[in-house]
Image (tube, rainbow, N blue to C red):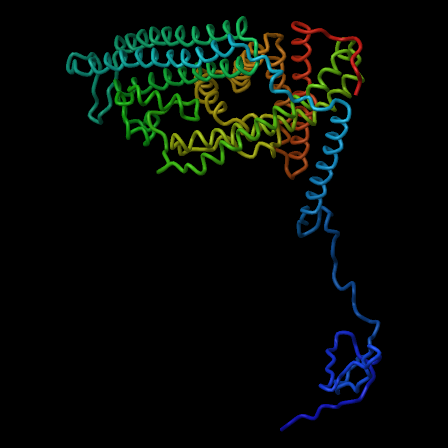
Length: 514
């Protein structure tokens, strides 16, 4: 049954703007350019409903979305976008101000790349790995001696148990220990000479800080890797000579793929030298293939970020450092504090760029080329609720070395956790001072003190990470960021720059203030 639709003839003034208007096919334009009025097609009659002012707006208990007792966590995406915009605009203003005052300070030809620096840097690059070859020779001799001991068979003084274990005699223990002491001394002298020779050459003969830093870093890495190589093979050799079926003495399952002494090969040590880790293992988890596109992308990031850090240092950090020298020389504390706050922004940006270039880009590219499977070079250190968590998460290769070869052995020897932590930070402070003081030719102890000074901060912030709720973690995270960005990094940079200028330049008394 057809439904009848009510129609009405209306004028254009009565039609809603969202209602389609249909005109008859006879519509036309008159000679004066205006369309002649035409009758409109019938349209549906609008059904109107009377509104009543009784709608319940407040029908249930609710909380403000920013309140602590809110049931739903609000999104802060808009605030994040606002922060990014403010940072971009603020830094653009600083860039414009910098260019107006100083012009372009970037100059490739101004770098003092002396021929002597390049020759010595290249020589050290090839000489330093030779100490790894000497470490391989030492372990090869020790492995042959261990195999000869097993060939003795029944002549061994120990006791073999029915379960497959071997209990060494006192004489065998003393012999093993004396052999290890000799091996340890040879390894120690070998790598210490490597570090000593490199440090002397860099400090007295290499002028350019970048070349010196790369050489010193290489020497320290070889020192740490050789130590790990010696300690690990010592324990593998002990397990080889004195097998044990006890669960606490069992070796990791992955080591069965290359049992001792099959791991004592030059190829095995070369892989460890190039692998992005400081901890030696006979076998590492490996990836199946090399993704060269991935490698190219990561290396592009390395070059791009290094160029950015160089530009930022030359164009923005250097003027702030130069204009801070007089204030530091006169111990003008308010002005020094203002300089530190101004330097903190650019130092933080350079530090974050360096972190990403090293840990995310370079180490991932190196791991891809070496087919190194474990690529957890860091975790979310930026959320650290305490300073101690930061040191355990931001540089995993160094943390793993310190825990495996320094902290845990000291705990096993009866040291308390606090004493072992002090030993770790003192050792780390010495390495930091070598890495910073030797290339800059200024061993002033700032890097060492900066590392040791972390211990009180760790003690202060450690209880915060264990507090119930989020407040403690927020406070600890803020202490971590303030101590690093507003105090630690800019102060260290300022002090080393001041020492460099005092030794090789002049601290002007007529410096132009920013």
